[in-house]
Image 1 (spheres, rainbow, N blue to C red):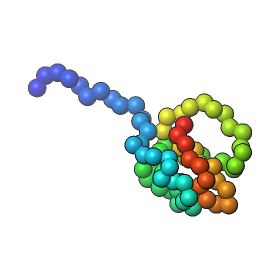
Image 2 (image 1 turned 90 degrees about the vertical axis):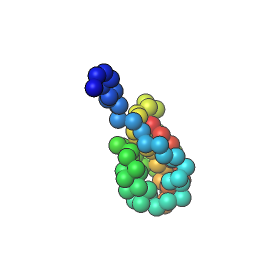
Image 3 (image 1 turned 180 degrees about the horizontal axis):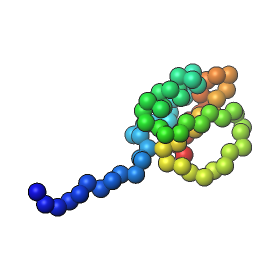
Length: 74
């Protein structure tokens, strides 16, 4: 058997839509995101000033009254 060594894949982000977290309880959403393979999950209050550096494998939640109002990658 010759040949091609498997190419190591970088820690990719999961094939997962951030929209599926909107409306969930923040604690539940974070648990689910980690289960689905997100390496970093960040919960932020509405209107939080955040740095916009993109990080693969990170999921951001905007949480208001314990509920995810918005979710986005990076």
